[in-house]
Amino acid sequence: MGKPKPGSARGEGRADRGLTSLHQRILSDIQGNIMSGRWEPGQRIPVEHELMLQYGCSRMTVNKVLTQLAREGIIERRRKVGSFVCRPQSQSAILPIADIKLEVEALGLPYRFEILQRHKRRATRADRTLLRAEEALPMLELVCRHFAKDEPFCDEYRLINLQAVPGAAAEDFSLISPGAWLLRQVPWNEAENRIRASGAAPDVAARLKIKSGSPCLIVERTTRSMAAAPITFVRLTYPGNLHELVATFTALTSATK
Image (cartoon, rainbow, N blue to C red; front, side, top):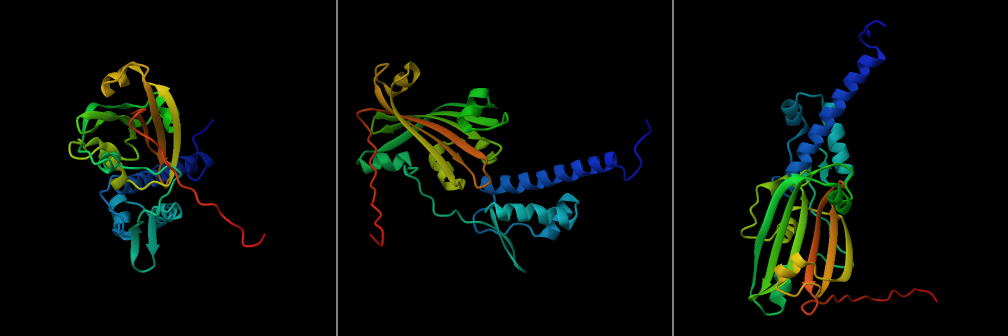
């Protein structure tokens, strides 16, 4: 069988794959700059001509990337002005994503936290299940303990998808807790919460300074970005006597009965 001639189906296939790869590279680079906070909400991103020079590609390729990002709500394109990072939309959930520092301070107690474990690694099968991810993403695994005055208030186990939030790899979280940092840095548009009561596992009980098997309230949350990529999974474990969840609902009434 002879070699494919220029313009043959096989040759076109290689070209298509090259364009697809470049499209994905530009898309990932722009998403990374936004998710990491390097490009802040409201900031204008490089114009089409600058991106064409940077990546050595056609205007059509750049335009397709920007169109996709605008469709997903990540950037806003303004005619004759440029493209801008979208500001986070109003976010709401049945269970609000709260800053644990504010929870403690609301009790009138001083707050502090400490990072107990930090590991960068590839996602395991169990991690992918928690994040609802299809591929073995680069992960940052964290164990954090939050205090109310001198007593452990909450145990935090967290996975951060470094592909979606590359800036987390360089953040040491010495001044701000992982959850608070993510709330400030990364826009999200989907959160799934799971709440359950369970006895404290031995390792968690040791960190919370309670007996193994003691009643605990466990909140598990997975958040995803506007591009539908998983951002983080977190498991927050509170001693049962230190936390409660309160939700207020308003009944909707029909205009006609």
